[in-house]
Length: 504
Ligand code: AMP
Image (cartoon, rainbow, N blue to C red; front, side, top):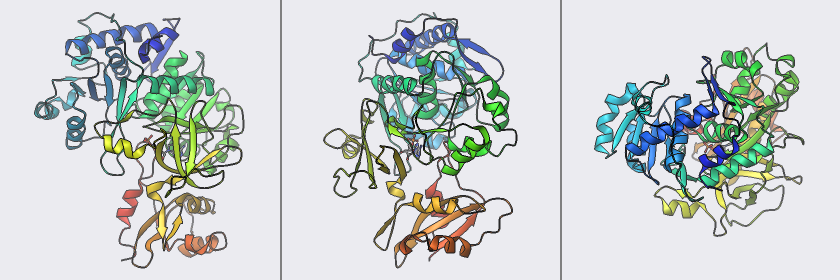
């Protein structure tokens, strides 16, 4: 069997007329067309001098052609490097300089601005791709053949490179191999019971592991299809939900949808599976969703470097606030933060993971790579978690978000769960802020429901009998919402900056 991810996908598809994708505007693409188009794009890349092992960087809007481009890179044996569409030219300079791609593909509207940058950084060619089949790449593709002999690669060759969000220091290029991606996609198809009959409502960005690998690779490996929305909107979901069988979302999708009066059992009856990941799903949202629709959202956990690590079960109990079991073939352990010693069940520590899903290392950062792996091959995720007696994993937060106050460790999630449970509270984020006495002071930023009149004293009194004294927030501040990135992650660094002077 070929190791090339594309060849593996292709060999699974027996019916080339089967639908692969439909856009919101009604454009339909079947598997035969997808493969033929990927052949054309692969020929364009090869004609531009792309060879096995090159990086192909792209900052393009979400479109069917962007997926075709990803497949074309696989066929050529190049690593696909998608970049967040929000990055400015100044930010792109770092990524292009670091990754040294042979070719850069950008939106036609950005060509003039990015052309001098690519020249300065030695990128051999710059071509364009817009969201409406426009740009030089689709034009060139019509002038070449639609057949391409897919490159033979090693299982350990790079299929893609994704930059981490870089919340601690510089963003790092995670090197993902053909076998990292194929093993995870196969595991997820089976674990979540995807079949040809499935229609996924796809409203995620495709420059991130969630929308590109979890969603798209699962559909490709199952021979299923998707409704491809340019982005999430409550209205678009409402319109397309009747045509779908599954939805994959970040928690924000669910917190927004659950507020909609139209959401009920009748109009979600036909849905097989709602999946959430990329950021913590509030247990409260999980419960509200169940009471409104009868469905238990399946929460899973993963990261750019590791693909998916754990998932709640398809058939068993989906526990609110837990990310479920290690996936088949994936080993998870919890270790002591200082000593690295493996901890027993029910103790909080560092989540470490090992398996075919775990990436090859950080691009051109051998020291950083060495520092994040144990000698026995486990990757240190940076997430703190706990495994219970039944083997359910729960995430307590990122290691760097741990608050150390007067020498005591405080895990934000524990305090947030208590606050979120209070009447009138929508959500909260607990952060550590510089404090002369304590080093860091536990501080809660709370978002209230419209019209609620909760005060700082009320929050503190409610927590007083439920938490040890050292865990109690020194201050509770109220804000209109929590800053989040596109994947729904709370930007705690922004909150630390905003409230940094609270105790000065
Ligand atoms: P990224 O590399 O952007 O996918 O971010 C990975 C990080 O997102 C993980 O290390 C976790 O901190 C967080 N994450 C992903 N899924 C979940 C989840 N279900 N619950 C809590 N945090 C999550």
